[in-house]
Amino acid sequence: MRELLEDLSGAFEGFELLNISAVAEWAYCPRSAWYEIHNGRRKARNVHIEAGLVEDEKRLERDQRVQEGRIIHYGLPLRCDELGLQGQGDAVWEEGETLTVVEYRHGDGPGNETDELTLTMLMMALKESEPGKDVRGRLFFTGNRCEQDLELTDELIERARSASKRTRTMLSAVEAPKNELKPLCRGCSWYEICCPDLASVGSGEDVRVLPRARFDRVLYVDHPGAKVRLKGLTLEVSKDKEKLATLGLETIDQLVLVGKGTHITTPALRTLAAEGIETVLLSAWGRFQARLVGSQYRNPKLQRAQHRRSLDPVFRLVMAREIVGAKLHNQRIQLQRLKRRSGEKGLVDALKSIQGLQGRVVKCEGLDSLRGLEGLAAREYFRGIAGVVEEKDFVFERRSRRPARDPFNALLSFCYSLLTKDVEAAIHLVGLNPCFGVYHSEVYGRPALALDLMEEFRPIVADAVALRLVNQKILQGKHFRTDLGTVQITEPGRKKLYRAWEKRMNETLIHPWLGTSFSFRRTLELQVRLFAKVLEGDLEVYRGLRLR
Image (tube, rainbow, N blue to C red; front, side, top):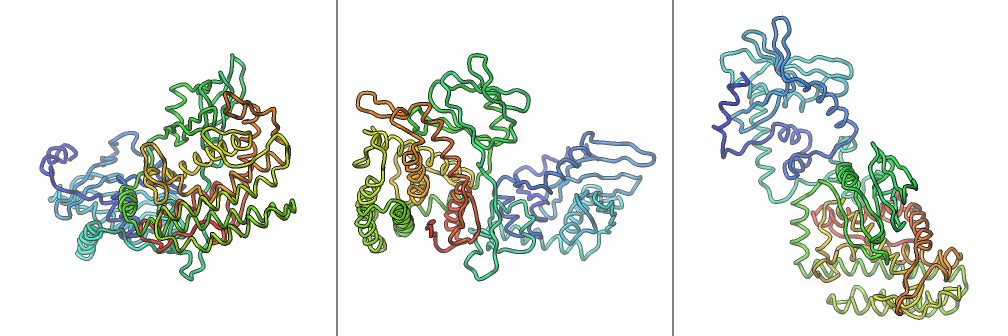
């Protein structure tokens, strides 16, 4: 029977076949089927999917098994010309003139209508290839070892025909099916990508956004001469044969190598990529240089929508106003907090100026005027910041970069590089292209979208970390050096900065719109996902993060 199917493979060349699993997904959730087709049929994974894959792998260790009076074929490829479908049976029992398709399910039975539809399509495919034999079906649930037999009836056949036709109609549509939060969403393996909770916020429903742990554990390697190598399932960091650290792969979400003096072996890079752990390269000055990630989820439909919307001047202006408005709001929040702590009277003028500029954001009729307004706000904001930098080693008059002319500017620039790195990581995680922005101009090599979405986080993350390090005397003048008029932070200073940065990124806040507590790093990802939901049409407007 297997040989017969292989001989028929050429008859289907050029004929577009759907996976049987795609039709089953349509019956479960049309949006889930959309994702399965448009993302290379690579499902996102959750605990249920992982457990099922382990069970499948054990069954497929051999393709055939002979028992008394029965031959069992495992992983048998099947095609149905009538429905235009292809799939794979978990097992087919061949007992004389009777063929039984067996579908294994992780968990407890009995099955639902989706399980029956899947089994029906497999039975139709098997019946088409072996018309003279009696074809039957069976569902077997590994949890409670429940068995459920199924016969091929006219009603089931008609349902399979209707489902395959409606699946094709849905997939030929320009847009994805409507994003709705349903009870079955909580256990769906596409939950991380579809985000029905984010799309349903503001709908009037009682929606609780589920926390997602991403990029919460970062390993920084900043010792000149340090080398990262793979040791079994652990990463070992050493220098001159001295072991500096050993960490299990399961404890790391991101590896950051700083400066030309740090090294990593090729086997370690390959393993990190395979495990979905990204490697980021920063210069000794904190400039982002490169990142390496393995094969990951990519959403061509989402990126196409992103590219299309990035060409729309009205959309860009609306989004840019929201981003700049959120940034100015958070600048005021930061200055108000500093005013309560320090009592600096000079902050009053800066607060009034920024408040007046906030009201002008929605009236800007172009990106250039919006950039000019943001520049005025930045001047007032940093003038206020200068009044609360207490340490004499960190005299700060105005913002200067490329190069930084004083230690505080050097510290700010390094913090902004770390923020860019984290925002770009979240953008790749969501499946967007960091080069297509809405506010910053698109220049070769510039992550415009990362620069856009980090704006609202600059005051409350990067500036907050820099001020904490200086005013709490964690960093001092000895942690900086000057080379030909350019100031940069030294290695001991960078180590203190990394600790303060991770502490801030893991601090929690209550999201003002979603109403749930998240870490700052998780909030970065949420804002990117909200941006993506606007691109996809699931949300009408993007709401920047405005702290209370």
